[in-house]
Image (cartoon, rainbow, N blue to C red; front, side):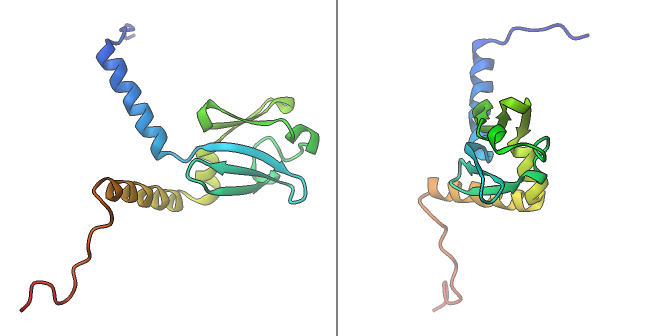
Length: 135
């Protein structure tokens, strides 16, 4: 068995930076609430998107009451949702991947990353016109 090694300050700082970068590239919950009329949980994500899921799509919540769902909270810096009366925990990244499709999620995350990179470089690259470079 490997022996535990205490990280140096440099290793700790590097791991902290990696974690912060990962959080900016992941879709995480900012808030969550139960919509009684639609009988669904509404989640606001860190990119501004708002998604709603019927209770049947949420593990452990298919038989939850409206009173139970009033207690839904965002935990783990947005990675999880928790419903205390049911002791139910839901992984937000896993929920989004399973319900919205991994391809859709990868495309959305890829576009967001490209947009951020372009923004750091001063905006969208200029497209090359047909007549560019000809006399």
